[in-house]
Image (cartoon, rainbow, N blue to C red; front, top):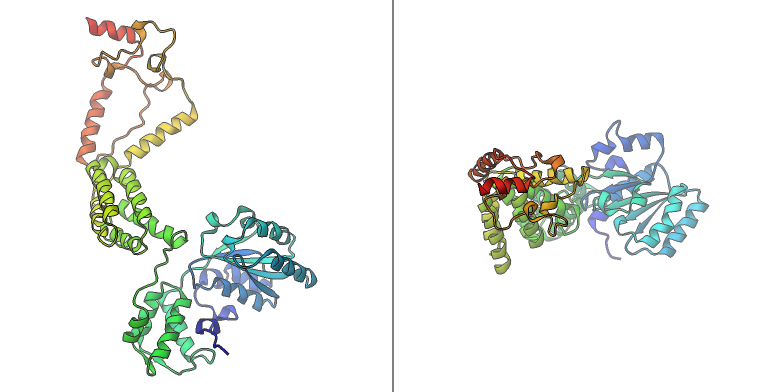
Length: 422
């Protein structure tokens, strides 16, 4: 008979065996209070892989002596669900733990919803995706949402020690050097399943003591939770942009490296372009142009060489003066439009009707253009663009804007024309 994996054998059966999650299981916290009250309700656990989402669900059912069944949203079918519903009816309630709940298709959801609604089943979903984006609103509204946080390195080391000493685990058959345990914990990225899998193969490979040299053979690189489409990916992209915005060049390069490691050129390109125009903008428009060129170069040469022009662009943007004045200006203009859409003045229309030539816009009189009123009368003095004086370029723009603001603009084009003809 094939031996079960170490991670499976070491799966906790009660919440007292769980590591971390003090924000849910600590004294006075919500899940702890549910256990003390002997009551369970439908909920969704979300977090990175290997953090114990499904395990916690099983532990809760065990401690409350409630029957439960596991259902996988990908592999399970409607017939499997119908069997669960019948079992729930006969046993006066059933806890159904659904892995990959964000992948539950509409047909399965339609079957599931009324049984969750009437309490025939207590649903506990587990997902690596953010439920606010990935879970159908009909399911989400019937469940409480709780984040299962990644385990700390200290938690991982504790779990490794337990696995080595436990009868269910390695039963003291090996020892592990502290440096080796720290490398496993560091590489795991909070994923306990990964850490235990590494421990298990190292235990087979070693001669009684797991050293850091052995660990490096079987865990050469850290786990990066940045698969396209999951929360780790979006977190890395978010941290990337925020680091550039915050002028932290080292952090920006670190998150760039994470995205390069994932080979995600599309996200790098989009975020760099958005960041360049949104956060640097008129503070250093030359850097914005250089970013476009750097992205083009990186896409032409591909990875790994593409990392070099991208690094140039990230350093340039992170250390540039920042200005969000353009974004703020267009948002202010849009807000004004949403409040009231005033008609465009007749003399600015493409084909003005019933306007005599003297009152029309003159394409051959550039000397008039700076004196014409272009905004509708009701908002003729509205100012949408407010300069941010972070860079020399925008300081010059601000100076130009100030000089132009001294000009008295007019909607009476006939009067302007007569004035300039004199």
